[in-house]
Image (cartoon, rainbow, N blue to C red; front, side, top):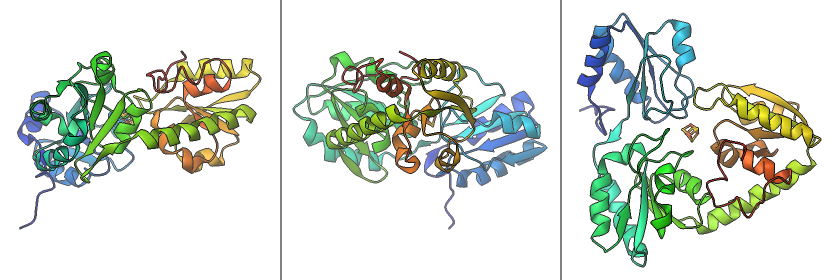
Length: 343
Ligand code: SF4
């Protein structure tokens, strides 16, 4: 028997249908990130009888920051169903249903947890962060961990986070809130999520990635990464022509920040220009006229894509460090490091 793509997730199609009927939507745009795109077909079949037209978005979808409002407007869709993420922006310019696609089965999660628990026994209190897909198992996780005598701290969310204990690759405010009382952190998600936190805290960060069954800490990786980042900061000092990258993606758009940084760069003797992009793609950056970049879009582009770009693409704080306006030691392993603001 053919398996439904939706089987692995807790998806309430009935609720989606009710939402469409209640609002009388006629044209729906469905958007999903890689990994969940198979679901779009099934979802389309579920809702097609209720509307005049369903359109499936086939472009990039990096996060809840990247809802396809502009595409929806262009094709005249009156609502969007966005898969795999929770709401990121405070308000949606167009009605949007966030179909979060939380996992149905915790088996892989609890199996991976058993691997890491022996390494956590020496700690007394631990902050825990989960990605949206594992959100439903947070309470059970807490109970299982507390059985080994460890107190588990779960922080309340501030936007763009929506749920207690939730994390995103660019936002860890639930964990920063409990940081003063935690001896270490546990991230349920992937190395990507753990690394984002490890760059912003002195405390040990442990990661459980249930999907690939990997667990561990990030001590060595974060030290190596920071050395590389410092080398790019040094290279940036020698660069003359700087592109200050602004993305038009709704949750990544920071023109105000970019203008401030451009002014600071010019006052420091750099030739800085605003570089407007949609997806910030390494090939396009490499083809542009700049020696280096400042990133005001998704902060993780500076971490994950740097090796593909081969020219410095610094975070705002790294830019200020490079210009001598902020100290390296006082910034790394603190929440300042990934702050998308001028500190
Ligand atoms: S800004 Fe980056 S890390 Fe944050 S949600 Fe968007 S894609 Fe993910």
